[in-house]
Amino acid sequence: MKPQNEVLSGIGTTIFTVMSALANQHGAVNLGQGFPDYDGPADVIHAAAAALLDGRNQYPPMSGVPELRQAVAHHNKRFYGIEADPNAEVVVTSGATEAITACLMAVLNPGDECVLIEPLYDTYLPVVRLLGAIPKLVRLSPPEWALPRAELAAAFGPKTKALLLNSPMNPTGKVFTEEELRFIAGLLEQHDCYAICDEVYEHLTFDGAKHIPLMTLPGMRERCMRVGSAGKTFSLTGWKIGYITADRSIAPNVTKAHQNLTFTTAPNLQRGVAVGLMKDDAYFAGLSTHLQAKRDKLGAGLAQLGFDVLPTKGSYFITTDFRPLGFNGDDVAFCRTLTEEAKVTAIPVTAFYASEDAPSHYARFAFCKGDAVIDEALTRMESWLSKRRG
Ligand code: PMP
Ligand code: GLN
Image (cartoon, rainbow, N blue to C red; front, side, top):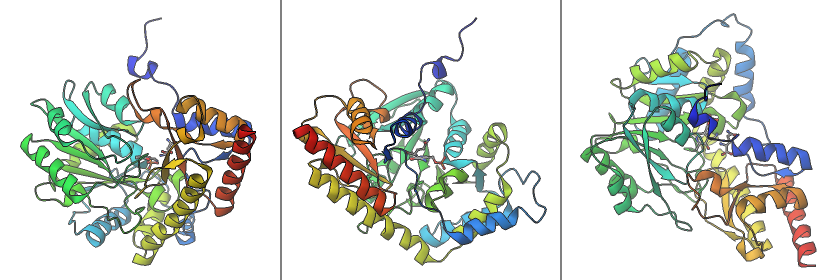
């Protein structure tokens, strides 16, 4: 048989699925894959359930039901002052994963260069490669995850078409500062590039850290495709509803990419999310307060156990350095052993790097879990560690 697609043949099953399967196999508390173990807001769920029963179950409009496009536009204005035309500048997709792919498809041609920042979410690189574009990787270094400005500037050149930016960032919990965003904006203008902005954790920020969409900076309105996810904003990761805000000059190509990926997205879930995006400010503020308490609980517990806990300003995740525990092995071995022996699952951070030379002593823990589940995970790790210390 002739060889199949070389990009897909060259990658494995996503680490999140692999680790969740391992967690199930060993009866482990799953702090690996980032999904809440609690339900989203009842009014949003009821709205989606009720929407199934009023006869709008055929193909919805390609760019999204009007209620949701209007709600996305309203949300942009309410939180960030972004004016977007719901009829020409909003596209609804089946999850942020599809949204990011659609945005990359909208602008990249084979041979174009696309700047990516490591550590990076696991779909970015394969999609850039599938499009025949050339990834240019720039690495943030722990524990600060500061932006290496000279390296970033050097990654841009005459062939650069786009940058993909994730803030708040998975797995680091970094929230890019206004200064860093200004620097990035300068490069985008200088090199006449687009930006795909993965902002799925926009409402999950802590300690007063403020998420600033790159799109709100001077000159960026026309260059940025801003991606949100109902999965994260409403703790409903299984719904897979994403939304893109992009200038009217880019949105048509984004819509055509969506047309060729999925064409439309379940109408009742879109209508539920429309109700969600119109919820009062207290809901959005409560989301981060609630999660911040969980971050603090898990972070304090992990530090108590001896992990070096890196700071997290946003997202569902804490990154830890496990070397102080005296574990001799890399992150993959650590996460496997932790699952098999302690019955707690985490994600090896090397999964977020493209090459072999990645730092291999970090494990990522998700804290979007019930308090009893976090406590149980900590208790299990404590008894595992005391046995090892024997
Ligand atoms: N981007 C990042 C950084 C993520 O962590 C995730 C995880 N879900 C996604 C995109 C995908 O979001 P969705 O589930 O809406 O496809
Ligand atoms: N975004 C989630 C995480 O980082 C996982 C999503 C997935 O399983 N594909 O854990």
